[in-house]
Length: 363
Image 1: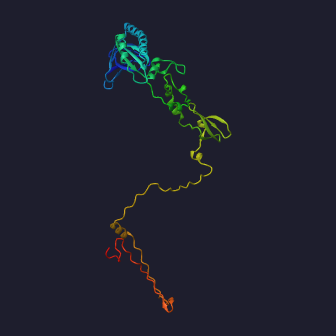
Image 2: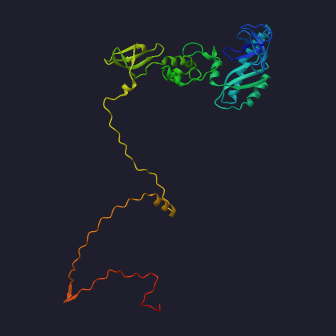
């Protein structure tokens, strides 16, 4: 088993685990620890705890020692230089007309490095600025770009509630916040009222979101019809935390009652209309899609279809009736006693277009 202790380097900062070995540490003790950027002065968060080496985080650093009076004085001297470094860097930014906002300058514990925090809309080329700073301070320089929320965490201030900002007092990590949380708590969607100092949505919208969701379960929605004291009423408002609703009864009186005193109406009966709606007739519209042309049937397909068709039963032949002899009609007389010649119904043969006339033999 190994002994691990949590250490933070600033107020409301992230907590990091370190190996404390055989050191006896208590909360609020100041210690010197080994980090990736060198030695740093931190504050112990809680008592040491034992942990299995297999479950411990990888690449743990160790606590070197408890901070002495000389270590604390050195940290104070480095902190006093931060304001001077901040002013000089801001002047160089203004002289170079760089589109960036300087937030803070931070010295490490042993003054071996200076970190400048800034915000910008996009990427900034600060290579020439780093050369100017390194030539003036004669130490390592690091430029670190941060977001607007981190800027508010470093700067601090007062919120619209009148208290210090949550992010610079106790809030360690930033949780995602959405407008849905404000709607769930019946807040006015005014950007000036639901936005913080950083210009983003208030982090405190996330604190009571789950409580509102749980208490809202079982409450009738606004516009739902209910029964109260034998009168049909309609829900017009909700009080989620008190689990009460405001209803408007048939006599046009509004009253706030607990949800337990209401009787929910059946949704099917509530939606049932007084007169049945007219039946809808659906007219079939001709399809605009064009049918593909049919392929001509082959001789084999025609033969198969003929065989598959059922033969109709033959009806019994009726006996033929004897025909009466027709009386000859008298022929029309044209010239005296001579009958008129009969007209031939035979059509004359058509001559082909390419054939020669019969009268032209030499043509």
